[in-house]
Image 1 (cartoon, rainbow, N blue to C red):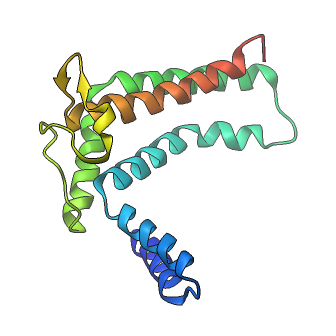
Image 2 (tube, rainbow, N blue to C red; image 1 turned 180 degrees about the horizontal axis):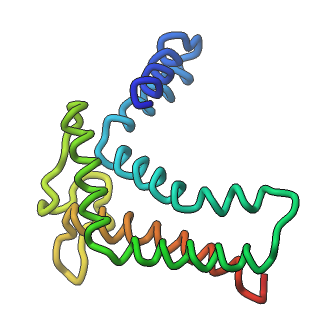
Length: 159
């Protein structure tokens, strides 16, 4: 899938008639070759895989409300367990790192201080924020928290 994605964006770049369109395509190409892009893309695949059954169920015309509520609770619990299990974090990091190495995408040392565009967000309690902290807490944990919060919202009486 990676080859197809990069090919499509590169084709858009090559075929673009306008400078603006070429610039946008070049920006996408540049971002796609970053560890952060690959990490977030793989994380999205993981979250969507967990919620796909519920999504398919909700698209059916006839639904049993008891089964639906049970599915929402189950998936919410799975997301919570996934978020809190260090093995899942290590597995994701390993998959992304291996992919990046295979495709010659730079992999930062996770213990290095965060640098670059995230200057405003580079410290935690006066200490430099590391890449590990950024990817583990700011992206990995937060994405699963948001996903499970969205499912909790489906169950709330206010919605």
